[in-house]
Amino acid sequence: MNETSKQQLSLLRQRIPVGLTAGLKLLEKADGDINDAVLLFRKEILQTLVSKIGLPEDLIQRHLINNNYDIDATIKSIDEERFTLTERILKRYQNKEEALDQITFAVLERHSIYRDGWLDFKQLAGFPTEVYCLVAITEWLLYVDYEALDVALSFRLEEISDQLETVLQLSSLSNAQRQAGELAELLYTKYEVPGNIENYIAAVQELRESDIYRQYEHLYKEQRDLVIEKLYDLVKANVQLFP
Image (cartoon, rainbow, N blue to C red; front, side, top):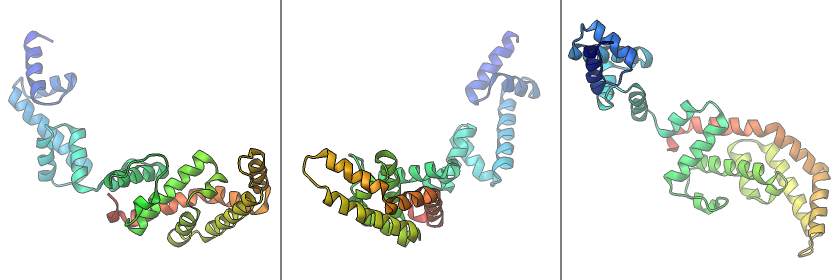
Protein backbone atom coordinates (compact mmCIF):
# COMPACT_ATOMS: atom_id res chain seq x y z
CA MET A 1 0.00 0.00 0.00
CA ASN A 2 1.52 3.32 -1.08
CA GLU A 3 1.39 6.51 0.96
CA THR A 4 -1.48 7.96 -1.06
CA SER A 5 -3.61 4.87 -0.50
CA LYS A 6 -2.86 5.00 3.22
CA GLN A 7 -3.98 8.61 3.39
CA GLN A 8 -7.14 7.91 1.40
CA LEU A 9 -7.96 4.92 3.60
CA SER A 10 -7.39 6.94 6.76
CA LEU A 11 -9.68 9.72 5.53
CA LEU A 12 -12.32 7.20 4.48
CA ARG A 13 -12.29 5.46 7.87
CA GLN A 14 -12.79 8.80 9.57
CA ARG A 15 -16.10 9.09 7.76
CA ILE A 16 -17.46 5.53 7.82
CA PRO A 17 -17.00 2.47 10.07
CA VAL A 18 -15.12 0.20 7.67
CA GLY A 19 -12.23 -2.25 8.03
CA LEU A 20 -8.91 -2.02 6.21
CA THR A 21 -9.61 -4.62 3.54
CA ALA A 22 -13.18 -3.49 2.91
CA GLY A 23 -12.03 0.13 2.80
CA LEU A 24 -9.39 -0.60 0.16
CA LYS A 25 -11.95 -2.45 -1.96
CA LEU A 26 -14.32 0.51 -1.76
CA LEU A 27 -11.59 2.91 -2.82
CA GLU A 28 -10.70 0.63 -5.70
CA LYS A 29 -14.31 0.54 -6.89
CA ALA A 30 -14.53 4.33 -6.55
CA ASP A 31 -11.24 4.92 -8.38
CA GLY A 32 -9.80 6.54 -5.27
CA ASP A 33 -12.62 9.05 -4.86
CA ILE A 34 -13.41 9.17 -1.14
CA ASN A 35 -16.87 10.72 -1.58
CA ASP A 36 -17.86 8.04 -4.08
CA ALA A 37 -16.48 5.35 -1.76
CA VAL A 38 -18.64 6.68 1.07
CA LEU A 39 -21.73 6.61 -1.16
CA LEU A 40 -20.94 3.06 -2.29
CA PHE A 41 -20.52 1.95 1.32
CA ARG A 42 -23.82 3.47 2.39
CA LYS A 43 -25.63 1.93 -0.57
CA GLU A 44 -24.18 -1.52 0.10
CA ILE A 45 -25.01 -1.37 3.82
CA LEU A 46 -28.55 -0.25 3.08
CA GLN A 47 -29.15 -3.06 0.59
CA THR A 48 -27.62 -5.61 2.97
CA LEU A 49 -29.98 -4.61 5.79
CA VAL A 50 -33.02 -4.40 3.51
CA SER A 51 -32.29 -7.96 2.40
CA LYS A 52 -31.58 -9.15 5.95
CA ILE A 53 -34.40 -7.44 7.83
CA GLY A 54 -37.02 -7.01 5.12
CA LEU A 55 -38.16 -3.57 6.25
CA PRO A 56 -38.76 -0.42 4.15
CA GLU A 57 -35.63 1.35 2.92
CA ASP A 58 -36.63 4.70 4.40
CA LEU A 59 -36.96 3.23 7.90
CA ILE A 60 -33.59 1.49 7.70
CA GLN A 61 -31.99 4.57 6.14
CA ARG A 62 -33.17 6.72 9.03
CA HIS A 63 -31.65 4.38 11.61
CA LEU A 64 -28.43 4.02 9.62
CA ILE A 65 -27.97 7.78 9.57
CA ASN A 66 -28.74 8.07 13.29
CA ASN A 67 -26.15 5.38 14.05
CA ASN A 68 -23.46 6.53 11.61
CA TYR A 69 -23.96 3.39 9.51
CA ASP A 70 -22.89 1.05 12.31
CA ILE A 71 -24.75 -2.18 11.46
CA ASP A 72 -25.01 -3.61 14.99
CA ALA A 73 -26.12 -0.30 16.47
CA THR A 74 -28.62 0.17 13.64
CA ILE A 75 -30.21 -3.25 14.13
CA LYS A 76 -30.43 -2.64 17.87
CA SER A 77 -32.01 0.76 17.28
CA ILE A 78 -34.58 -0.70 14.88
CA ASP A 79 -35.45 -3.47 17.34
CA GLU A 80 -35.91 -0.95 20.15
CA GLU A 81 -38.35 0.98 17.99
CA ARG A 82 -40.31 -2.06 16.83
CA PHE A 83 -40.30 -4.31 19.90
CA THR A 84 -40.83 -3.97 23.64
CA LEU A 85 -38.07 -4.97 26.04
CA THR A 86 -39.86 -8.24 26.78
CA GLU A 87 -40.20 -9.05 23.09
CA ARG A 88 -36.51 -8.36 22.58
CA ILE A 89 -35.63 -10.65 25.49
CA LEU A 90 -37.80 -13.42 24.04
CA LYS A 91 -36.01 -13.02 20.70
CA ARG A 92 -32.55 -12.90 22.20
CA TYR A 93 -32.61 -15.74 24.75
CA GLN A 94 -33.17 -19.22 23.37
CA ASN A 95 -33.09 -20.74 26.87
CA LYS A 96 -36.63 -20.19 28.14
CA GLU A 97 -35.76 -20.20 31.83
CA GLU A 98 -33.03 -17.65 31.26
CA ALA A 99 -35.46 -15.49 29.27
CA LEU A 100 -37.98 -15.63 32.12
CA ASP A 101 -35.31 -14.62 34.63
CA GLN A 102 -34.38 -11.63 32.46
CA ILE A 103 -38.03 -10.58 32.10
CA THR A 104 -38.54 -10.90 35.86
CA PHE A 105 -35.53 -8.67 36.42
CA ALA A 106 -36.98 -6.16 33.94
CA VAL A 107 -40.32 -6.16 35.81
CA LEU A 108 -38.65 -5.53 39.16
CA GLU A 109 -36.46 -2.80 37.69
CA ARG A 110 -39.44 -1.13 36.01
CA HIS A 111 -41.23 -0.98 39.38
CA SER A 112 -38.10 0.02 41.32
CA ILE A 113 -38.20 -3.15 43.43
CA TYR A 114 -34.73 -3.97 44.67
CA ARG A 115 -33.65 -7.12 46.44
CA ASP A 116 -32.62 -7.26 50.06
CA GLY A 117 -32.69 -11.03 50.42
CA TRP A 118 -35.80 -12.80 49.15
CA LEU A 119 -38.62 -10.76 47.66
CA ASP A 120 -41.38 -9.44 49.86
CA PHE A 121 -44.53 -10.41 47.96
CA LYS A 122 -46.32 -7.37 49.37
CA GLN A 123 -44.24 -5.38 46.88
CA LEU A 124 -45.99 -7.23 44.07
CA ALA A 125 -49.45 -6.06 45.10
CA GLY A 126 -51.25 -4.42 42.22
CA PHE A 127 -49.38 -6.35 39.55
CA PRO A 128 -51.55 -7.88 36.80
CA THR A 129 -52.25 -11.55 37.52
CA GLU A 130 -49.90 -12.78 34.81
CA VAL A 131 -47.03 -10.54 35.92
CA TYR A 132 -47.51 -11.49 39.57
CA CYS A 133 -47.46 -15.16 38.60
CA LEU A 134 -44.19 -14.83 36.70
CA VAL A 135 -42.38 -12.99 39.49
CA ALA A 136 -43.76 -15.23 42.25
CA ILE A 137 -43.02 -18.53 40.53
CA THR A 138 -39.53 -17.56 39.34
CA GLU A 139 -38.73 -16.45 42.90
CA TRP A 140 -40.00 -19.78 44.24
CA LEU A 141 -37.95 -21.76 41.72
CA LEU A 142 -34.89 -19.77 42.71
CA TYR A 143 -35.62 -20.46 46.38
CA VAL A 144 -35.94 -24.19 45.71
CA ASP A 145 -32.64 -24.23 43.83
CA TYR A 146 -30.92 -22.29 46.59
CA GLU A 147 -32.45 -23.77 49.75
CA ALA A 148 -33.87 -27.21 48.69
CA LEU A 149 -37.39 -28.39 47.91
CA ASP A 150 -38.35 -29.41 51.45
CA VAL A 151 -37.20 -26.07 52.90
CA ALA A 152 -39.21 -24.26 50.22
CA LEU A 153 -42.40 -25.71 51.71
CA SER A 154 -42.16 -22.85 54.19
CA PHE A 155 -41.75 -20.25 51.44
CA ARG A 156 -45.03 -18.57 50.49
CA LEU A 157 -46.73 -21.95 50.27
CA GLU A 158 -50.29 -20.70 49.79
CA GLU A 159 -49.37 -18.04 47.24
CA ILE A 160 -47.26 -20.43 45.19
CA SER A 161 -49.79 -23.27 45.34
CA ASP A 162 -52.52 -20.87 44.26
CA GLN A 163 -50.48 -19.61 41.29
CA LEU A 164 -49.69 -23.15 40.19
CA GLU A 165 -53.35 -24.14 40.35
CA THR A 166 -55.28 -21.11 39.15
CA VAL A 167 -52.91 -19.44 36.69
CA LEU A 168 -50.69 -22.23 35.36
CA GLN A 169 -53.39 -24.92 35.63
CA LEU A 170 -51.06 -27.39 37.36
CA SER A 171 -53.50 -28.64 39.98
CA SER A 172 -51.76 -31.98 40.59
CA LEU A 173 -48.49 -30.26 41.50
CA SER A 174 -50.33 -27.67 43.55
CA ASN A 175 -52.26 -30.31 45.51
CA ALA A 176 -49.13 -32.36 46.13
CA GLN A 177 -47.35 -29.25 47.36
CA ARG A 178 -50.15 -28.38 49.77
CA GLN A 179 -50.23 -31.92 51.17
CA ALA A 180 -46.46 -31.94 51.66
CA GLY A 181 -46.66 -28.52 53.29
CA GLU A 182 -49.35 -29.67 55.72
CA LEU A 183 -47.28 -32.72 56.65
CA ALA A 184 -44.18 -30.58 57.15
CA GLU A 185 -46.09 -28.28 59.49
CA LEU A 186 -47.38 -31.24 61.52
CA LEU A 187 -43.92 -32.78 61.82
CA TYR A 188 -42.19 -29.54 62.78
CA THR A 189 -44.85 -29.02 65.45
CA LYS A 190 -44.51 -32.61 66.65
CA TYR A 191 -40.74 -32.36 67.03
CA GLU A 192 -40.62 -28.74 68.12
CA VAL A 193 -38.23 -28.09 70.98
CA PRO A 194 -36.74 -24.59 70.95
CA GLY A 195 -33.01 -24.69 70.36
CA ASN A 196 -32.92 -28.45 69.80
CA ILE A 197 -31.30 -29.05 66.41
CA GLU A 198 -31.57 -32.84 66.76
CA ASN A 199 -35.35 -32.64 66.86
CA TYR A 200 -35.39 -30.42 63.78
CA ILE A 201 -33.18 -32.90 61.93
CA ALA A 202 -35.51 -35.73 62.97
CA ALA A 203 -38.52 -33.82 61.61
CA VAL A 204 -36.76 -33.18 58.29
CA GLN A 205 -35.73 -36.82 58.04
CA GLU A 206 -39.26 -38.09 58.69
CA LEU A 207 -40.64 -35.62 56.14
CA ARG A 208 -38.19 -36.65 53.43
CA GLU A 209 -38.88 -40.34 54.02
CA SER A 210 -42.67 -39.96 53.89
CA ASP A 211 -44.67 -41.14 50.87
CA ILE A 212 -46.44 -37.78 50.67
CA TYR A 213 -43.20 -35.84 50.35
CA ARG A 214 -41.61 -38.32 47.97
CA GLN A 215 -44.63 -38.14 45.69
CA TYR A 216 -44.42 -34.36 45.74
CA GLU A 217 -40.67 -34.43 45.07
CA HIS A 218 -41.17 -36.82 42.15
CA LEU A 219 -43.94 -34.66 40.69
CA TYR A 220 -41.87 -31.49 41.09
CA LYS A 221 -38.91 -33.00 39.25
CA GLU A 222 -41.24 -34.38 36.59
CA GLN A 223 -43.11 -31.09 36.04
CA ARG A 224 -40.46 -28.45 36.65
CA ASP A 225 -39.82 -28.07 32.92
CA LEU A 226 -43.57 -27.87 32.39
CA VAL A 227 -43.75 -25.00 34.89
CA ILE A 228 -41.17 -23.15 32.78
CA GLU A 229 -43.10 -23.89 29.57
CA LYS A 230 -46.35 -22.67 31.11
CA LEU A 231 -44.73 -19.47 32.36
CA TYR A 232 -43.12 -18.85 28.99
CA ASP A 233 -46.42 -19.31 27.17
CA LEU A 234 -48.11 -17.05 29.73
CA VAL A 235 -45.65 -14.24 29.00
CA LYS A 236 -45.90 -14.64 25.22
CA ALA A 237 -49.69 -14.61 25.33
CA ASN A 238 -49.76 -11.47 27.50
CA VAL A 239 -46.62 -9.69 26.34
CA GLN A 240 -48.37 -6.31 26.42
CA LEU A 241 -48.54 -6.54 30.23
CA PHE A 242 -44.77 -6.80 30.60
CA PRO A 243 -42.06 -4.14 30.13
